[in-house]
Length: 144
Image 1 (tube, rainbow, N blue to C red):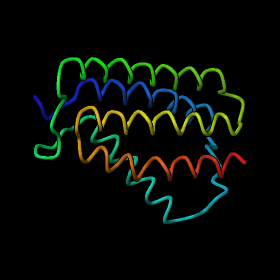
Image 2 (tube, rainbow, N blue to C red):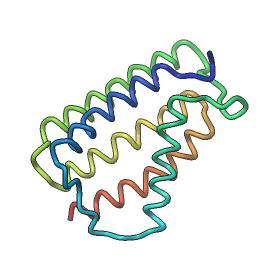
Image 3 (tube, one colour):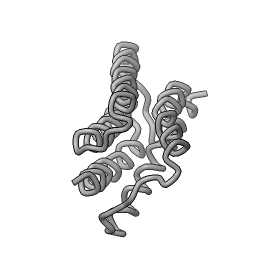
């Protein structure tokens, strides 16, 4: 099952858990103070691309890990990034700040880009390049 990345699925589920909890506890959600439709569309396309390509490997666009050592590095670094992301959510859950906004946008951006590079997934790299700058910019603008 080279087309399915179970570890990518696990990492995605773990990243989504604090976001789901936030959505349940804060029913009003989050107020988008900066309306730039082009950046928002780029963020959403990148976001859903990253979610999908972390889990699904499209043949011909995904070339796998170069070695077992690279795969181990992928697992270790991704696990650390996911733990860091969840820890920041827990620590800063009730504190809205620029630090929280940037940390919670930079960490998944690094996770997606790193995962794409390590797994040699062209589509994940493209999606993360769309997602990262737009997500970080939107998060920063809304936190100011």
